[in-house]
Image 1 (cartoon, rainbow, N blue to C red):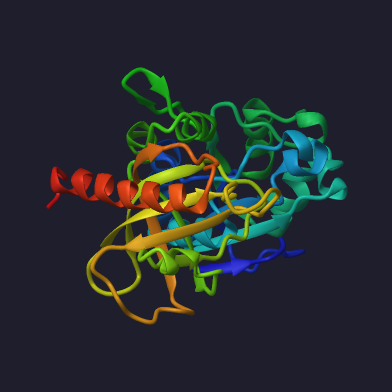
Image 2 (tube, rainbow, N blue to C red):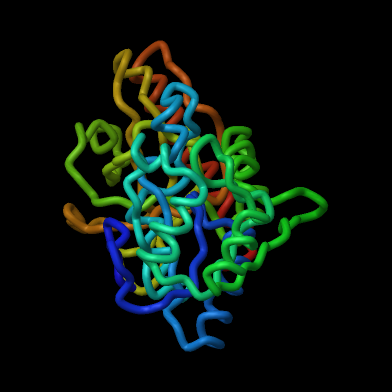
Length: 311
């Protein structure tokens, strides 16, 4: 997949395009991308995605912006796995936000990307003050000669699939429901870096996964699997949070204790798959009490995997 950090002034080739933030790449996004790839194949053109960095709400209301479900690196990997040929990562700033709906279509879609067909969600809005909608796209399509298509909402058991619904499920600790909305377990990917090695002192060494996002959509202690360290996924227990027993005001960390594993993996890039939440993170009165709880968490995680349906 080719990744572009801006929209070209003039398109080098026509495209079939979809537009959105695609945070989390849930089942609704996947349905849209399947349609995108099919239409691109039909027209013999590259399946292309326009996405934005940062998220628009991070620009206009950063204190109210939602926690990201995926980092940009994770998002790009997921888009590629869905068959996307090109992704255009547009810097979302006040200049872009000030474009009228007509200029958004004319400058970016028609001139910059040479769109032949556009697929968007049925609630898609664009342009200054979100003034553009699907009807505006259709009118422009008739004028400039491109097709338009609106994807309807995808539901799971009567619930609309959305990034907000996934965030709500993760915040509530219902990882199983989040997985149903995503079509896969929720994951966080990152590089293994050196930590403070406190777990090793207690007999439970942990891999410290580097986090590059400001806010986490979930916290607590979890049963997880880890991929990226061999052909099969490894099982383990993970803590994601600020470790209040150690100090106040610490940055969030993701620490994973891998079962029956003893290898130097510093520098490796791994993906942590969150399967089940065991408990909330909490502050213990002493490090000895924390040590006892870690042992209990590991035992509870092993018990969870003992009944795991996938072997």
